[in-house]
Image (cartoon, rainbow, N blue to C red; front, side):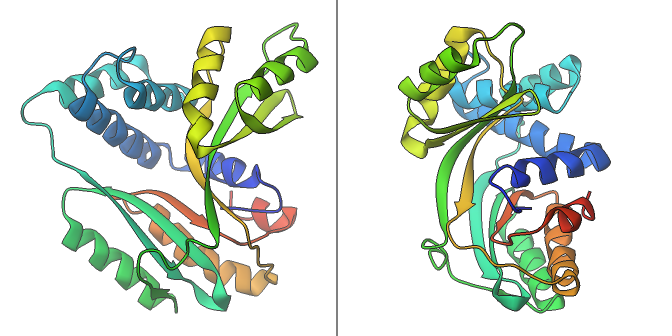
Length: 248
């Protein structure tokens, strides 16, 4: 859930990860499997797989689970998944952008349409939310011990970061989508492993809701996030701290 700051989306989802670890593992395993199937089982030669493994480690996925997912993706019987996106509006004019990975598009779109209809929203056409979300590279990692924060910040900016913030012992980095790979390579060069590294859709227009309206929209978001075919759900709610805490 996107909240009162650009990091609230990460924090909200990480809270949900802790509560629904098996669901999160299912989604991460799918990403590892697909990355392996499409680009091979060598992380050094397959950036998508390297990123998927990094995110799995950040979610505390056991090493043997990661290895089994890679092995599964290397086999001839690995499922054929496709990446698809859906866009729509929840109640109160909240924009919702969905990224899914599925082996049955008809099932996935039926589930998503049903969720929107049940919760008073409407599924739109692809491209209808392009003016609301920008795709950005997002990195989050704990600061290494004895780090010169100013020096590290300058190195990350030189690699292409648009914003660098430090909070609670973590460094948060935002980059243009085109600079995502350069930031990842700089972190690899520095020996830093991100706990979260991905392309996110960051809202440019935010909407505040009262508590009742927030809970109404959040019920739709939770149904979507609980769907195994859906990898990520973005929206443009600007939520205060007490609303964000109520979703974790």
